[in-house]
Image (cartoon, rainbow, N blue to C red):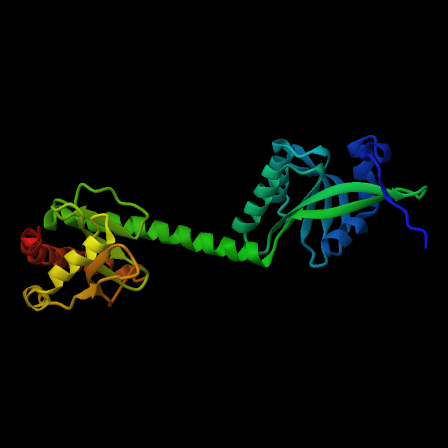
Amino acid sequence: MAISRLQKVQLRELWAHEAHGFTKWLAENIDFLGEALNLELTLIEREAAAGPFTADILAEDSDGNYVIIENQLEQTDHDHLGKLITYLSNLEAKKAVWITRAPRPEHEKAIHWLNEVIPADTAFYLIKLEAYRIDQSAPAPLLSIVAGPSTESKRVGIQKKELAERHILRLEFWKGLLERAKTIAPSLANRTPSKDNWISVGAGKSGFSYSYVIRMEDAHIELYIDVGEADRNKQLFDTLATNKDDIQRAFGKPLEWQRLDEKRGCRIRHVFSSSGLSNQERWPELQQHMLETMVSFQRVFREELNKLR
């Protein structure tokens, strides 16, 4: 059996002009692109108007959704990426396809990112265009997906959106707590709210800090121990724990004593299990409770920390 080699053909040998050559050919052979994308595509028009701009090709998929196609026989550039987004939004399309001879890694990453953050029913594709022949055969175009939507990208996108929403909620929660702290815990009131799930203040002894922690379904206040050495942290924790019963009695509320042997630091905390970040209507009550309880918590441990060497 005779075996031949694929011979790469320069795209400009097939289509000297992008608009009058390749775009015209693709519009007449839209099924080539449909096979690459695993979509049924029907041509609507070339040079579809989007305000004063025009998309190379406007097509329709089997669900009746618009698909815009932007062609580039050269290396990808920012101009075409901007066009892709402009046409997608102005033509109210659900899919945007960018066909290019040479996709830059930066633009490939941009397409992956867009597929993570856009709505689940919208998609961007970056397609690499090549052409080959075997011996003296007619040249054949090859369209390969470089970047496109996937189940993983949508999952990552959902996670990012959820994380961003939590960041906004945390910021608002800490704003409320810090405002209340002006009258209950003035030393905390000059702190800046953040998107983190904790805010901490020094305990007056190096390596010790008090923290407020908010989570989706609960919250807690804690004394955290970390002087920089795991063994020393455990020694300090054990010293405090020898007086556990008296500390519990003085505080008057349940405490969790977490030695955290698998970690460097140690923690002693009180948990508010009745509400958290997701219970927005109960934030004022929780913020007030956390601040008032921390005042008592600090008073009890201040004396204990002063005993430590």
